[in-house]
Image 1 (cartoon, rainbow, N blue to C red):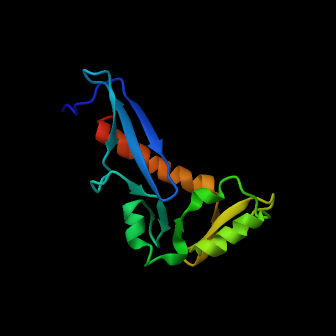
Image 2: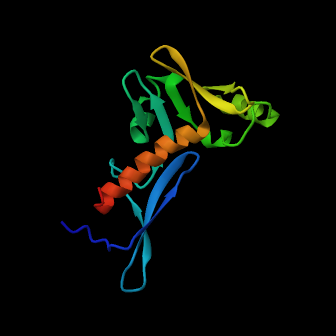
Amino acid sequence: MSTGFEDKISIGIDLGTTCSLVGAWVEDEKGGRVEILKNEEGYLTTPSYVVFSDDDILLGDNAKAQCVIYPKGTVVDFKRLIGRRYSDQSLHILSQSRQWPFEVIEEPLGKALIGVTVRGEKVAYSPEEISAMLLVKLTKQAEIVMGKK
């Protein structure tokens, strides 16, 4: 089955603070172009949401749809924590102004972590771990669309 894409393709992922997207460089008769790939729901952007439900980790549109049901397991706006120390006063001002559904907690070396409740237990993740979860989803999305799975 031909997907219409050439073998030599570059994929780019924009991991955005509120939404993310996947683009592919596609060679054509004019030299090439960037094509934004649709996600499994048919949208060009994927919400940068992660929800830890009772049974699963939901990502993107599925997570956004379930965030009301699992507010203490919802992670949004997490990129704002990357590289920040818990002692950073601007982080606490940001946390109060954004009213995040998750807790910002301190790890032993002073780094800011994301605290969520999963099945009644508190769990901590680094913002990089949350980013990686979303990046895996976006990469799989690109592989499926590009026929490389």
